[in-house]
Image 1 (cartoon, helix red, strand yellow):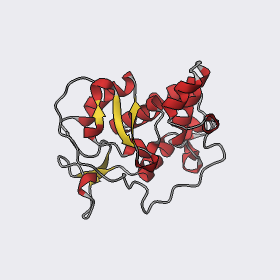
Image 2 (cartoon, one colour):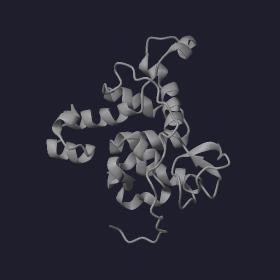
Image 3 (tube, helix red, strand yellow):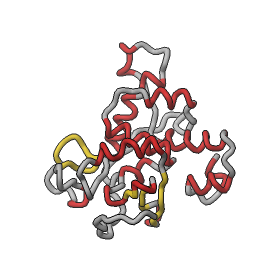
Length: 210
């Protein structure tokens, strides 16, 4: 690990991203892997820096969306291209990303040193837990629901290439989970060994990869 000087974050409880939130019903092809040309098309979309960083990190790390959205700035080890997450069951684990994410993160973070990595566009409402608010900007942590909505809305035409833009309101886009599934599928297709896939996915069994 590279030596570095940074403020250690206090021990915090699991990120409550899904409290009071109902996730959208999953379409039948929710876990279907995206083709590599579809992933390439996703990177070409004209979206905000926050979305570029979030989607790149999800695909390059094969992490779960709620884990990535719970990341704080102080959880990142940028020189090592990794971040500390709280996984299912409360265990502390690590996710690793690649150069695409590494190139975007400094611009996304700016001078921020702590609290949520991915922020909302507006100021946090009164009563928002302190750990879920950026002290520099006053904005709150981006929720799973909002992140999912943004991804789904921006991928409607990619998911329906034969559709007319005039019909976009009636179309369904992709789900964030498909980035994780696609990353693991592409790794397997490229010959990544089963032990490496299990380590990357943090699954306990091979059946969970199916």
